[in-house]
Length: 408
Ligand SMILES: Cc1ncc(COP(=O)(O)O)c(C=O)c1O
Image (cartoon, rainbow, N blue to C red; front, side, top):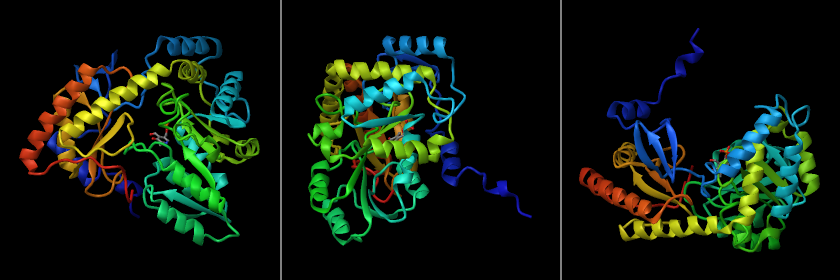
């Protein structure tokens, strides 16, 4: 009999990265030093890979709220929301989020990934699901758990989406699934285009707002508010691990939809609820998101400096104006070498390799937060310029930026 564990080997590519000393994953952060810097391998480095866009994970108000909840309610809830694991704190957060986002109801779950899995009961056997090619892995997983027929459309390609809607079975319920701000490309979905199509064909819209709630829109309500199209979105998922500086997630939408998910989403029904400290920190973050728009303005101004600096260096930067920028290197090993050299220069960025991106489109993902200063961005740009120069010498190729994950 063959051993079921025989498949448990590192992929050849990972072996090669280890052998070359440029393995870029699971790098431990030893300390958070404040001011957008962390300690890695005994050195102070600039964190250029975090989604803590508003720099709240280190905010004393979130820490105090979390510590107080932890003292009062303990470290965990030891139960799922449906049984013994619902806290008044969860309900408070749900009420505040629903009011903030302009949805009838919200359901708080334990991660953003889980929030997306929670959607799967909406994808029934008589539905057709039209999904952007660049959607996050957790949405892909939710689709697998559901039963709807899947049609993918090319990233933000409204002509193709229109064609799919036009030719969809009129007896089927149509759902459009996209991210508000795409996590790898940092670009926004074409919500005006989607709203125009749903006006014509009557489909429901589900928006993963993991990256944009807190960051975009005058009031921080995300891509929908940015486009002044909040009523065009039927259901929204979010995470507390990015702008909220905590952990957890939520699904927001019409009350009957959220009530249905509360009683049918196995991903949430059979999993323990969000711990008190994370819930209280998310509540404190929501208060800051509502009352301190200057944090959004600060990070978007810093993003502009990063984007124009990279453009001046010759990189093709996708539009969007957001704090996340992909630099396409192409070859996976070369990309990891780029990452390792950036770390040598004191910059910790992220690497995206296939299957997260298409074959041959490995990229460095850089992001900035409200904690970063102009001087830090300039240091980051100098490091990118120095490394790009060296990598070009090695490979004879110029890294360029791309918009995301076609075919992923
Ligand atoms: C678009 C998107 N959706 C969902 C998630 C999952 O969120 P979490 O990390 O809170 O589970 C992420 C996280 O990377 C994401 O980028």
